[in-house]
Amino acid sequence: MPESMKRLSDHFSTTEVLRDGSFAYLDEAGTTQPDSLVFCQNLAFLETANANLNVTAVITTPELAAEVSAPGVAVSDNPRLAFFRLYRQFVAAGVAYPPMRFGRGEGCDIHPSAVVSLRTRIGDRVTIAANAVIEDFVEIGDNTYIGANAVIGAEGMMTVWEEDGAPLVVKHAGGVTIGRDVVILAGAVIAKSLYRSFTSIGDYCQIGILANIGHGVRVGERCVISGNCVVTGRTTLGDRVWMGVSASVAPGLEIGADAQIKMGSIVVSDVAPGQVVSGNFALPHNVNMKHHLGLMRS
Image 1: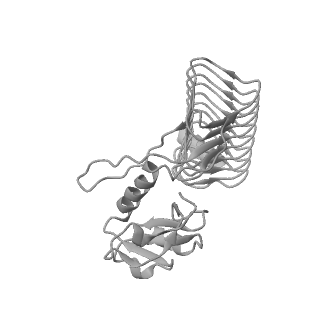
Image 2: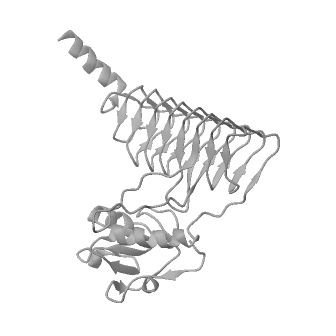
Image 3: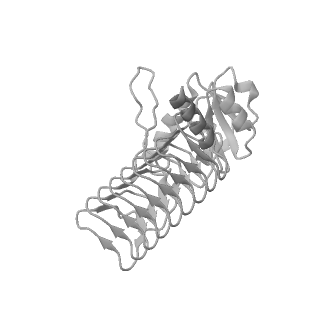
């Protein structure tokens, strides 16, 4: 987004703007970006926005408008669609992307078949194997290995429907940051963040074959995400989290430091630091094993 502030009245009609307000960024209700415009299509979103001092303007339904505490309010029967239509305008104008310095370090080993955007920042001694794709606004730290056919900075899924039922294509405008000494194996996919921010992978992490990391995920240092795992959008993994093969984590969860998620687990709620979980849906591992043993004995 441009650094200069915008006003709701610049983009919405006088009948849609109930209180004119200014904003610099478009983001979600839980944004950490100051001066953000967000959409609130239900009371849960609105409660989050009202508690967030970074939110300076809100698009919401006429029924919820009176409950908005932010200075600016615009109304729409479909706030989500109105928001993403505006978002697409900023992306098309090239003003929604994160600030970033581009360049390539020394001693890199990049396979001739790899596709590496010029709008990236590659550290020293980075290895990028055959047919890997490094998209715009990706930063890769020193000594990191990117395996064959991996895609870093892929478009993530954002489902928004037009009024006629057609899908509204929402291009992701964020990026990906990968720390130093990270190993990302063949076929792994890491999606870029939706907004002006970064999906992030901390130092010394290992990402297995065909793992899938969604948009806006934040992975701490020294994590192990095994092959075929799925970490869906906006999830946070603390330091030293271990995920076994084919484990999946639902969107927006908090996985505490030193937690372990056993192979094949489906995690649908937060996991406390140091906790070990397993199963579908995942439970504390000792509880799950007692249940499993009970079934075997019955």
